Length: 71
Image (cartoon, rainbow, N blue to C red; front, top):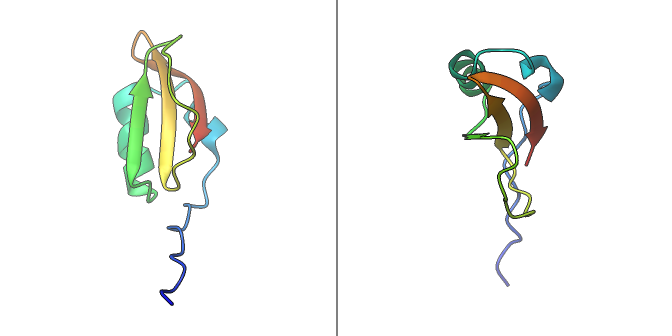
């Protein structure tokens, strides 16, 4: 039987620390802290609800991060 794959480790990071940052600076910081996928979305964007380990999401309004969540 094949082994069960283990999900990638999540960086030890605080998503709320990105709120208020410029979107480009927030993305650079997230990648430096180990996030493999960084997704920036405008407010109100319709997205699927699947959880992806190693992904951080930014809601960006006028080039400023207004909300941040993992997955």
